[in-house]
Image 1 (cartoon, rainbow, N blue to C red):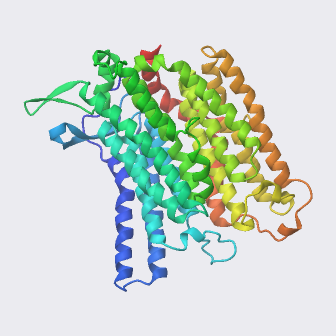
Image 2: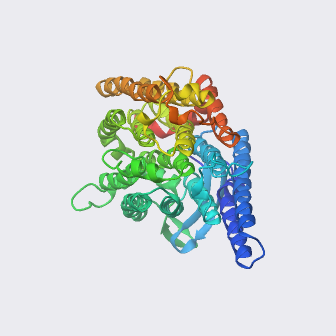
Length: 536
């Protein structure tokens, strides 16, 4: 990726966005201390923890708005740089910055984290039967602290331009997600949390080995009179484009760049998740609390695609060209296989979890074509899926809070009892299946437009899977919303104000970006053009 540092002066904006949630987590721990000393009652401490988390995530969202307003979309280089030495002995730098690829994901992280924090709040007019958020009624301070630490890790991943720092934030994100599922999850929470942890940790080990190999076979620079290697992603990308890694010694008789590429790709593919590494995701989603499923689908899955683009594509372009066909095939498998699995699901949340596996396959297919439309569509799909999937999981949370089950066939005729909920569910379903006028359509269309010249057969197969997507969504809607009302739900209340605060902003954005995707395409296009130039 031919990127340069655009602002020689230091900008603290990204540092504040990254670490403000961590400061909030520290403040929450201070509240715990006050409770332990008897200064605050448990109820007061819990409420204080919720307010701190809400304020911290809201301030980050405001900063994200200013970041978007100040970002220059005509400049494809890295902006808002904060750069300094961190561990000079190994030339490890504190290096943050954003370009068109990362700024969209930084904004998405801020938005989804804030919505997830609102979704973690009890129904504030009073704890009634509408408040099914039992998971935040015990260990509230711990839950909010973990939520804030998770936000720091996610934001740091998208801002880091030093590979060591990138890896640290990647691992920071792992632990709070493990605890959020393992402590506040459902009946099989321990199993789901351990499975998530082991899969992700296995990928992290492969990533670490590849990063060490890239460091020792990469460019060198003079620091304090010493010749040292660097973890600087921009310099490593320049070295890789110049063919520097091609001169690295063989690894067990195999090409270093291909071995490193595969190791990194598997680490990122687990996070996507890509077939056959996808099995941790449905378990994690089903057992996770609703707000954590929102973050998991809205942000965490995007880290895998982002890592492939930021590191595999930018640093190892020759190996990326070598692996293009495999990426396209695995992307198609993701799309088609997961769509068929969705048809067989009876649990609404598990169906939506598998739909995420299917939709992330579009990203793999689009970016494997090495065309401007394909890679634009892949990144645009990350943005649109980051809006649609949180809304889908919030929809599941609403019905589960009332019915205490997610069995699709156990409902029936709900549209006449909860019309507002039915309308929101319909909007989210139609957006996910790619209805024109909603944001899911334009991202899928752009992927097909970019992939078709390179992968005609795979694109045709993937496009026909849209029929399967429509089938499982419409079939679920028919069984849940239409027909005769199930008498068990004759008194079911419609959505409340907390739920409206989480669902309507996402619904509005889904419609806005369905008609005006230019707002995102303008941000990403310049940087992505530079990214694919060495691959064409």
